[in-house]
Image 1: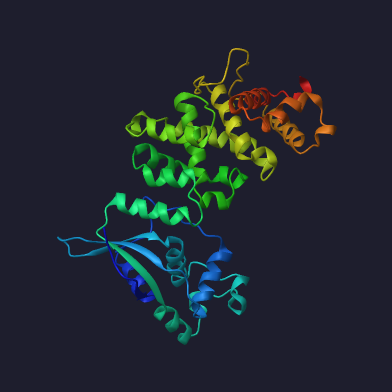
Image 2: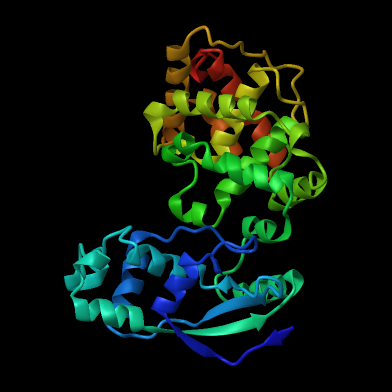
Length: 355
């Protein structure tokens, strides 16, 4: 692998590379593309005021046939995306930018625009490095910065129909993310991908323990599976939209947190006849029926479970105690079994008060 000494390029040069499709902001090993607004504004404010920002790392490849130079961003995607979006007028600065609050690029004085475009970004380039070399560098960088989580490692490691399908489906369920199943910060770290992957795993082989290693093993097991053999998109979206509708009045509440949402989704799959048994035991669980006979009763039952989650244990109705105790169990499957059974009862319109 050939490296280069640090070099500087102006923002104007990066903008031209982006316009000419010679800058790849989202190679497969990168993280998600979203920074929170305060962080984006703070970066732009630093540039406007002439403060230094961390250097970028690019993989530079030269196509010998087209003679074009392509630059993959190994480290610094969020910074470059923020710069490019600001230059395109896609967002206004927040209070983190002081007197520039509310400014878009077009609101800057001409001299400030000139200074912005002439601002020099320090870069180091990996020349014609292989994917394996780049992945190794990426992992090393992030091993002593913000630690790379399992979702990000899987995004870097797997490039196949299953991993692409996970990304596609993650973009198609905004109603689920709007509930608060995962936070915006978690979505930046690709936890939404892990959630979708695990849900697809339910449809493929049933509910597993849900450890990060289980999700990685799922990716490994599906790396040769063609798209047409994966669960149908229509079935997946039907389950997701059903869950989102049932939880619509509970947006942001404890019951929509990822562990509960996963088991509610599993219960919906069970009711629709598309959940393999996996490691759960179905033998003594009455299968709810779809369409639900009493949606209002189901919504009320879910609301009761939400109230139970937020009630101090000493004040809790003992009929809800197994559901609450399951949250803190170190036995993942037994915990999921209990919560699955409560959600199946809720889908049948039965509150824990009816137990």
